[in-house]
Image (cartoon, rainbow over all chains, first blue to last red):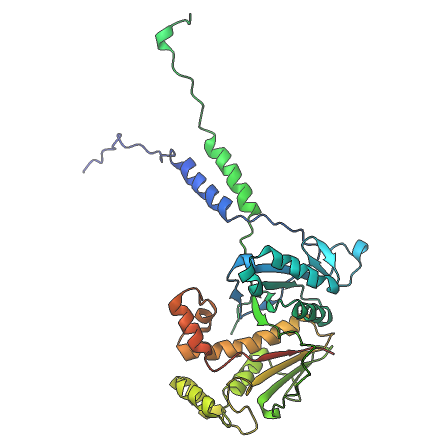
Length: 154
Length: 213
C-alpha cells in the first residue's frame, strides 16, 4: 500500500496580511457612496409602487417636496402637510421655494429644474393638485412622482 | 546612556487591530448608507395660463380623447362607462386607443408606415375603429385623466402608471427593445438618444391631467 506522506512544509493558515487592505477598500467604497441625509423628513413617507420608473438624469437639478401626514400628529395634526427642506409650508410658499431652488442653479439650467414629489400613498389628490398649480405658476413644470419599483407577478 | 545600546529595536506601533478599526468604520458606513434610489414617473405640467391671452377653445373631437375620470371613492369612469377591470386591461385599452389610426392624416400615415410589422398587425387587428382616435400624432390622440380632490394618490399613480406603460410599450416595440430597456435609455449617449427620439417620433406622450374639481 502506498503511503501518503504528509507534507509538513505547507502551512495550513490563510494569510491574513491583506485583510486590512480588503476591508479598507470596502470602507472607502461605502464612504464614497454614502449620502448623509440632509433633511429630516417630518411626514410619513410610504411611497406608492409603480412599474414605469425612470431615473433622475442629473441629481443637482432635483428639488424635493414631501407631502404626507405629519409623523408627530399631536403637534401638527393628522391632515397631510407639505414639507420643503426642513419645514412645513403652505401651498402659497411653493413658488418662493421653487425660486430659491432655481437661484441655486446656474442660469442655463434653471428651466430644467425637476421637482420630485415624494408623496405618501394615503394622501388625497386635492393637496397634490394645489401644489401642482403652484408649480405651474412658478414655471417648474418637470415633475417626478417618486415611487418604488413594483414587480409584476404576471 | 542607554543600556544594551545596539540590541534595541525601533519602537513599533502594533497594527494587529487595524483590521478591527477598519471593520468598525465599515459597519458604521454600511448601516448609515442609503443608496440613493430616486426613481419615479416623470411628468410635464402644462405651461401656466397666460393672462394676456384670451382662452382659446380648441375643439377636439370626442373620438380623439380617451377620458379617464376618478371619483372620491376611487372608482373609475373610462370612456363614460364605469370601469371594473384591472390596470393591465386599462393599459391595453389605452394602447389600442393610441394605435387606432381610425382616420389618419398625412402625418399619421407616415407614422403608420414607420411602425414595425408587429405593431402594424396590432393596428389592423384591434384598431381602425371609426369611433376611436384618428392617429397618434400631436393633438389627435389625447389621454385625459381627471381626478377628484378626494381621489387617493395611490389610484392616481396606478392609473398614470398604466397610461405611461401603454406609451412606453409602443415606444419600446417601435425601436425593437423591451420596456425595461426603454426605461433605462441614457439620453446622454448619442446612440441611445437617437433610439429614444426614434421611438417617440410622431407619437407624443399626450397625457392631459385635468384640474380636479
